[in-house]
Image 1 (spheres, rainbow, N blue to C red):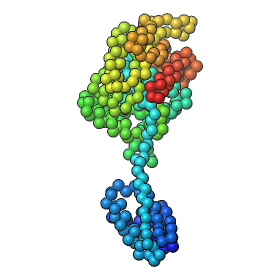
Image 2 (cartoon, rainbow, N blue to C red):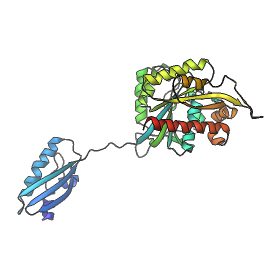
Image 3 (tube, rainbow, N blue to C red):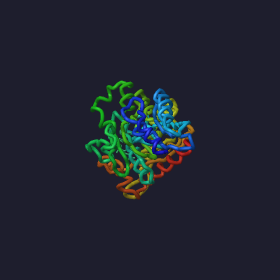
Length: 342
Ligand SMILES: Nc1ncnc2c1ncn2[C@@H]1O[C@H](COP(=O)(O)OP(=O)(O)O)[C@@H](O)[C@H]1O
Ligand SMILES: [Mg+2]
């Protein structure tokens, strides 16, 4: 009997198609219960008209069979999920009130530290004004790859265990400075959607310095789950830190905390520590703004050299005090992100 039912179903056209409901693959099961047949259907069809037609055509066809008096359709609607090529747990963004405080250096070394801690990590260079992450990660000039499985997507370049994409490589040089906010907005939006990040625990986003429109749209589009403020201990940098804090607040992005960069100096000869700038300003600012203090990074020749040669210090000299400082900051960040998003 079941075979007869299936044969009969092979004669029922799928509405709007030139093949049967069986060929369409929607028939899950057929169950004969005496003179009654139960047809189980699984479909992702969104057009209600098609489903309505099936509700008429299938029973009509089966009732014509000898021995069948009753036909019941069990229709299970499945929601077709759009394939997601990026699955990012936490997006964290670094910003600073102004350029030159070491925001990119910190982003790079944090990203590599996170990867070393075992997290799947990505790094997005969103600093359209000074895209220097490719240089710092040693991937300058490496052509962007297309994701073969998803032909319209871009594959990040992997280095030191981190997946890297730089927006600077995608837009014409010098164009960024004259771009209007709305243009940047749509470019970034598209950009965020067109990268195959895969599964990531952390995506570190290096935002442009400052707190203008471009920065706002960037942070908005990136759907940042936590912000990090990078400052230097000089006095002038403090008001910039406040601006950066206001910036995240305006966007309702929780601030994970403050990192003080170029905080102190360890003499490479005698190992003596000296506070070149009045060290501790970051801690003070954090306390005054009720923000967590995430760590302090010394000023160190090797950090600069690592940036210039594309070998971040946390990989080239992982046991140095500087690398430990970055690793401590990374651990603090992990803790804060989890706390804020639990
Ligand atoms: N802690 C540090 N010690 C020594 N040099 C540093 C340190 N942090 C940053 N630098 C150097 O300072 C310069 C500016 O850093 P960068 O990360 O490009 O700043 P930003 O991204 O804020 O503009 C770079 O040459 C970098 O190598
Ligand atoms: Mg930078």
